[in-house]
Length: 116
Length: 113
Image (tube, rainbow over all chains, first blue to last red; front, side, top):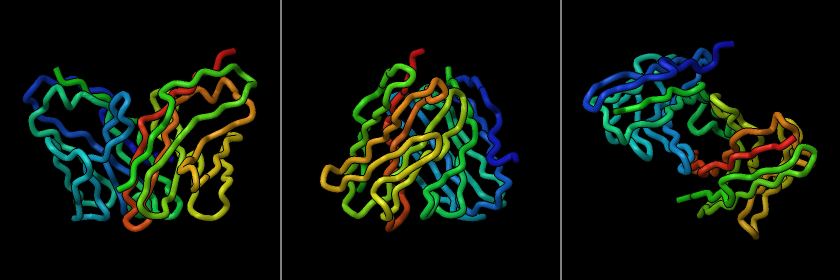
């Protein structure tokens, strides 16, 4: 029962470095998304995808890139890390966008990123 | 555009006493509403959902929520708190036209022995 798997769980970067957060799901979900969680702000949508080859911006996309070459994988790239990108990042997937009628998004356990 | 406000950032209760976590929403269209729970160092898990059927919705682990359109509220309740309920709870509103979801800021529930 892997579900949604995120790697790495923890990462420390220096300002200006780049990195990729990996997300994989084994539930054959068409919809995948990335959120960031900051204290007092809940979860905010960064980018999402409704299927392989299709991506779109969410609420806070600046500084992040995504691609969706397969149904299973949805990596999030930070091109030039900034301290403002220090956060906990969650990948979530579902059958359709926003969980559809059931509203159920399946979340990974998160990736905690610190940018110095 | 829709939005959601969780009225308390932190709620502390004693084990065995009732739990009330408050959520107000704003939506220009009939919304779907959800509560998610996040245990420490874990991802979020769906607790319950309202999608226009019964206004009183029952979820997992004894939680329930009532949709009150006149008050634009969707408060989460549980009659008797258990230590394992300690977690962060998120109220979520979804626009049914495009399935855009908005998360509240979260309420951290502490349960004292």
